Image: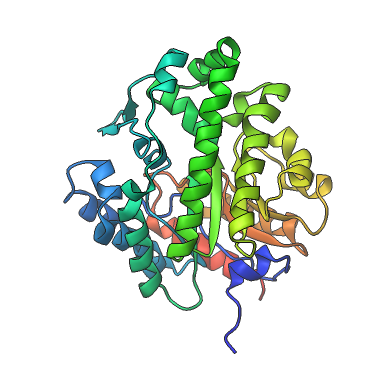
Length: 344
């Protein structure tokens, strides 16, 4: 009988001497082979909807570093794109959508068309057929508040003020928009699982800007509903929740939203996270991406500190946010070697 994949064993609560390792945004511009493939595609969204190319870049970091998991190459904004809220990406400027400024504009959104995302599911099938037997496969979606913040502002903003103002001024319309993203996300993640992913992660990149009551209403509760919806259809599939910037809420999240693991961001002290959560809670993180850029002794110290903090409990080694474009490949190699020496 084949040994269980390292990531999956930790997600069911096993503490391993060598934690499974993968990196958020591991398929990306720091890799020359990624840049070569990206250069052959006109737009970023076309790239996400090109199954052979998306599968290739999903597999590239596995070939180079043999991480313990591959994560689907796509984008969180394919969900609004499949609702008729068309998305484009401008070079150097990020995503652009038509801003939603009134409840009437929100009401005019189309029905979520999951068949619009057929290329994503084809990508999953291609990756699944090519992954090494010991490598897990992660799918993902954006959390409703983060997705809605782009839909309302029409672009990324530093403090998500447009979405927050919309929620204060038009709470019923905002609640309806959040609910539509919840329902779409459940369908989307379920189809990813049916296509072949073994784990899903929900990214709430911007919920940390919300006051406590708003955080519960617009982040924690919608994420809880997505997890419950996915578990109702696929009860054996683990779900990782990554809520960036919400450090003080970690104990509450681990007790209420029902995820199998919780990603923690760079700012959170691992020792505090360990002290504030039950010993069987699976935590993921939280190396500073800039420490990975710096490399050398600074990288070694940070890696050793994180490994020490989580020793003896189920832990997935990862960054506290996505890998940066300027990251030297040799530093990633150094990270992988150091983590995998942890059990020696």
